[in-house]
Image (cartoon, rainbow, N blue to C red; front, top):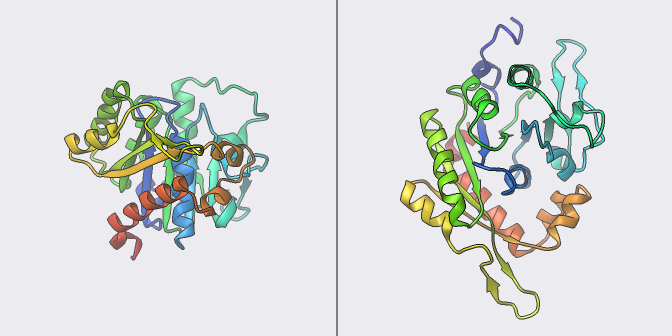
Length: 273
């Protein structure tokens, strides 16, 4: 039986935990959270894959230091082989298909949906513990295609926001998106929650305080935690060394790993299978 004859749920049956990362709008750090969660899971000893399905802004390969790599095909069954990144993380991204960093992705919905389905159906993930799928921002055609294609196979959604009241309605829509598709909300992550000044050591809430936590409480979903701003993080991202940043003992890396530990505890039974 070929991959086209199998249901996507069958194709992913050997992946113990499948998570999607979503945000109601762009620019809130969704891809950063996707890559960081993958690294955190790998640091905790799990085998991990990342599907960078953010077709209009594929940045996960850059963060993980594999942006210059290309996808290969399994000679035997013609399945796509993921690129191996740091800590053995398996990565598939639209970025590997583009001829250059400055090439815009201008695809209409039918072509976009076809490519996303190809990614989902034809990648050889083999046996991994967890797969993190980084969706395009919003609740439109692209994220809907993936979620519906994996109907019944997604174990949870991680919703990423920033601490502004403006983001409130957008987060609520992302929660509603998950619930309408019967996907469990694993929790909300509040990126750029605060900033600790290196001069006076005080914690500053630049955009707002505890917004993500309040939304989570009102919606009845878990709050996975806030990620502080760290000026050094961008240097590690630009040079593809996010895994090195995560290995440093900093307030930001500890916050991310704390969120990962909450996810592991939430899905402990599934990861133990």
